[in-house]
Length: 266
Ligand code: SAM
Image (cartoon, rainbow, N blue to C red; front, side, top):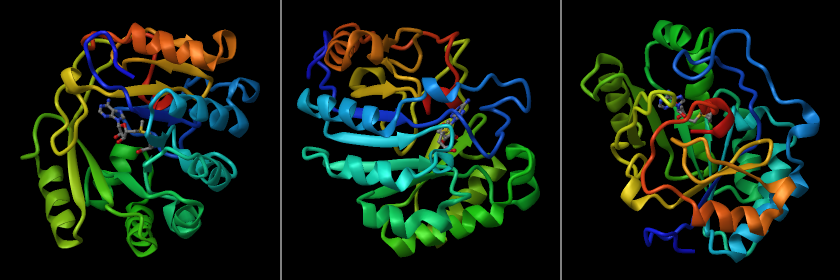
């Protein structure tokens, strides 16, 4: 699929839930979140059928995200369904890692190829502060389990306020180096005010090569994270939503006043 700006669109990110077991300060408010009702959340069948259609249109890379994807009940079943779709060459997940030690082996066996784990500090107190109560040991265990299960390469997503020279980010660099993990530095973004920049170590944030579509947990297909445009796949149909999202994908991100990281999936 080529869009109006000749970009090849081959990457679908699927948010499977808006729920999360952490409350990272830059991502989710502590309270007052209006969660999707269960009937609005796409079923596994809907997600799999949509993905099949997307693959027919040229998607060959799929990432499962959230919210926290591992809090979605039976997530391994969805992974198995997606892994069974011929034409997906790269099936990955972005997770906070806290529950990964319980799931890594089953996910690998179900066909997940690799994981990105979000981690911004190796300091226990700072971690609890950033995530509002998370236990860093759970993430360390999750990372170990991912490596052991062969969910490789394990990449660490590290959100920085300004640069990778910040103390937390330097500690993460040391930890990744010691444990043979890849690292991506993501500068803290602001959807409402349209602040985003290049992801160091990854391809995100570069509009000229953006190859992404994003499916939210309630079935909105978004051509751009920094734009309010979305297409309801249940209302207009899977193929039509894909065609419109590709046709109308903006040349460059601007801002997004309706969406949040935790319901689009980053
Ligand atoms: N719960 C999973 C996780 O923590 O990786 C997946 C969803 S989370 C929304 C996906 C990614 O978005 C994470 O790497 C997270 O750090 C990042 N993220 C969330 N809010 C952000 C913000 N304001 N700026 C930059 N990245 C952000």
